Amino acid sequence: MSLLVTGTIGIDTLTTPFGQADDVLGGSAVHFSFAASLFSPVRLVGVVGSDFPEKFRRMLAERDIDLAGLEIRAAGKTFRWSGRYVGDMHDAETTQIALNVIAEAPPKIPPVFRDTPCVFLAATDPDLQQDFIRQCTGAKLIVADTRDLWIHTRRDSLAALLAKVHGAIMNDGEARLLTGETNLILAGRKVLSCGPRFVVIKKGEHGAMLVTAERVFVLPAYPTTEVRDPTGAGDSFAGGMMGYLAARGSHEFPELKRALVRGTITASYTIEDFGVNRIRSISTADIDTRLREYAEAMRFD
Amino acid sequence: MSLLVTGTIGIDTLTTPFGQADDVLGGSAVHFSFAASLFSPVRLVGVVGSDFPEKFRRMLAERDIDLAGLEIRAAGKTFRWSGRYVGDMHDAETTQIALNVIAEAPPKIPPVFRDTPCVFLAATDPDLQQDFIRQCTGAKLIVADTRDLWIHTRRDSLAALLAKVHGAIMNDGEARLLTGETNLILAGRKVLSCGPRFVVIKKGEHGAMLVTAERVFVLPAYPTTEVRDPTGAGDSFAGGMMGYLAARGSHEFPELKRALVRGTITASYTIEDFGVNRIRSISTADIDTRLREYAEAMRFD
Image: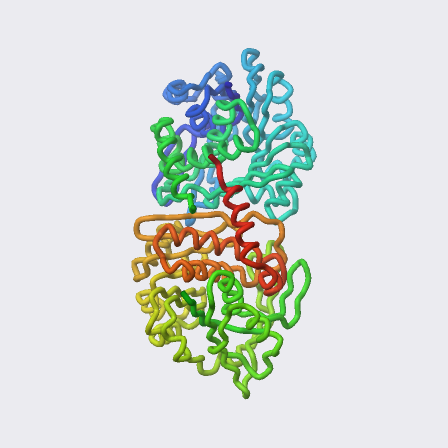
């Protein structure tokens, strides 16, 4: 099955304790797409300006990523973000941001994409995410990401969005902020009470948790010392997870568990180098190899 | 194989969002012993005052815990600690502390205990931990815990201690503080460079990590909403781990992995009620049941 993603496409400048990368390809939909395309064909929906480098478009086109939904606005400029990570690289500090075309009218889902069975809505205004859902008339599985900004500013819209998706994904701090629950299982269940059938809570270096009404699955991050740039880790995780679900055509609990494992492994590559450098260089064989190592390392009986 | 533990025995007053427990049995060696005695006979070494309630002594004696090393000082008073947990119950705030007999001369390892093959040294002054090691002439496996206080105040003594143990256990913050490394695998390896053959890093709600020179094992905490009092979670974890290793008579890597799993399961019971209430009430059958649930919940293929 194919998989549609809506989200940002940007030009990033990244600074970490391991160096700096200037004007590299970034954005939530980009990191998602590189990850997901290791598992399933991807349909990318997003908007850039006339300054969007042709080489970035080619980098995307080299993967199984359909760019019919990549809108290039001649009069606009591409979204730009500069971020710096210090110390434990837990949180990025935004040092510069220019929304540019992101602040204009949102892109439309192209008619040829409207039958896509799997849809991932990267974090943005929850009203816009609902608008995307209305356009995806053939969707069988819709999963939405969100972030603290929307919890603070659009709580009601976010609740309305959650009533329309099958799955929600957010990080641990956002789950706590949204629900007021400290315990992540309780937080997850409170999110479920808004409508989704499953919630995935990302915990960064501590892994991820899957919560459904009846069950919980928790898994550690891939243990690694190779962390040079965490940018895109969460979007890669979501991409690996959704790509796998799209390929399997199911989101039953055992498949969701396996999907979280694929997300974990995919994200473990992303963070090894700046931007999309590392994820661009790997194949499904690399995923399979690391997946076997991870499964073996986790085994205790 | 039997297992010796040195550490505190105290009277705790505990306040959490779920209630309060006044003057209950506590202390690192106590939480450790209840946990470890589910797997192996335990030899407890510690000191209390004349105010130590006889019912607390009986509670310990009901388990397979040898109290020949429990020294009762007629002129002294028992160590007392009052702690409060708020919000996410991540850290205890000490509201009152009276070291009492803990501030006097340390207990001696009774001659009949000196041949104990497995020894666990709960966190205390690392010079004292080294003194215990000198007395444990028959020890084949020595594991020491430490805490931030000793990293801040006794770094050299702690390094000397680490050169004399087979295994070290500490929490994630302490591993980072001790080594200056943010990445826990790198932190673990730096601890290994002081001497131990393995390091266990406890991550609270996020589980635990085992680091040896060649390998890493990481596992999540048992997912639970039943957390009423985190006091003793770390000591219970160590107790379950060491009790299992003592029972197996091995600390090869696969056994260490299984030992961490036992520690995880044991600690998951401790936190369900105040003090030792919950851990006192369970049997090895309960451990086995939850262990199966955990292994099944973790399985993804």
